[in-house]
Length: 497
Image 1: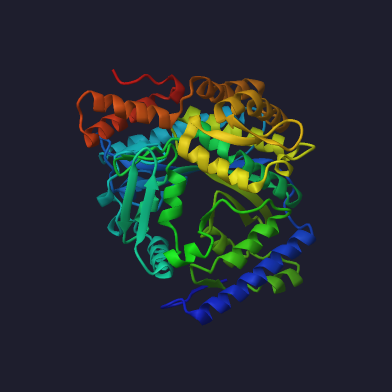
Image 2: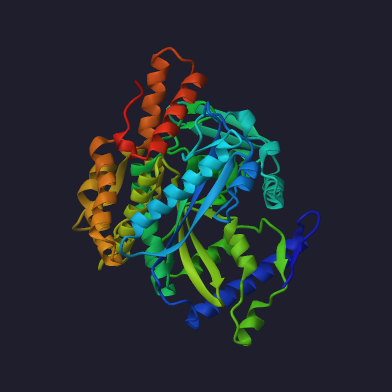
């Protein structure tokens, strides 16, 4: 089936046609749900990690095409800017020694990619925001040379009708105006996928929303942008502002941003796709010849490409994914809250914490989202992004519905890690791997440290030795890359000597 790109301006008639097609796709999805046509549960998980390319001084290198040509693997692909690449790990069943297998695959794949990048004077840095990025690095000329990125940039700016303004106040204050969406490319994340049945989707998504704040608190790794020290996990706020299609008047009217935590707990995956259609105008004018209802009437499975494309331009931190694989539809929860890095061990520890905790909360007899208001979960996420390991979260007490303010590190150590361990047991994860990787999370909490804390402390160490800000950030980034390559988890990293 062919795809048609609407030429020229995406005018009112185009939008009406596209929304009609989206509505057909939504009806098709609802029919698939009612007919129970989805893949059986196979407990599959998958990872995607976005990476930065930097030179020996820690400065960004705009050469992803040259690097990817040398890597020559379909597991690696371009990302938004020329200093970004992405690695995709094939789906694995959540059982046995999968965590250690994932760690070994990542160490092998990233080590090979780093050696190939070294042939052209680049190295891989696995971090939420490359600390040495400057404003002149994040311009439209440095976007990757792919039509989809150019089109996305054009559509967001056309809908916005004005330049993009970044205004982030944290430890320091940053205000910056951009004529493109290129600042989004600073955000490099770890994305975790979990395949679920339709019946398990809503509990899994609600649980993922709940755990987003503890995830970020313990795993924050993005404290710098354009030389300023901002939030401990600056990436989510940067992403929201860099992709915002709303001019000031629409923000004042309460129009939702494309990058969105959400506003309510759900009962079905269809709730999220219906919100996508209700709240967000279509961004990319690509239409498919498929008639989803006719395909269903004929006993087939529709691809629902418009639904998937529209969903892909709405950046929920926990995104629903519909996909047809080998003729069978399936659903995934895509968790997008975590930054990349600092090491493979840290990434797998974050992975273990997420999958274990989501399973435990989704299967709890009394779901936590019945005791935690959605607004409190959203506020927790903001607090975790702002304060990282030092965040204070609102959390329901074991008995009753009252909320208490709890230090995130204490909450994770005392309450959430035992739940995550039980969840990993439920998946059938080997106890050796369970204890090893959750132990990394426990040590971060005990020492009150993570990637963001180490970066900030190392930066101030170099400032104290008399380096100026740019030199201190470069020295910190060089040391970060060296320690990341050595592989010991970040809570063991020493301060520079």
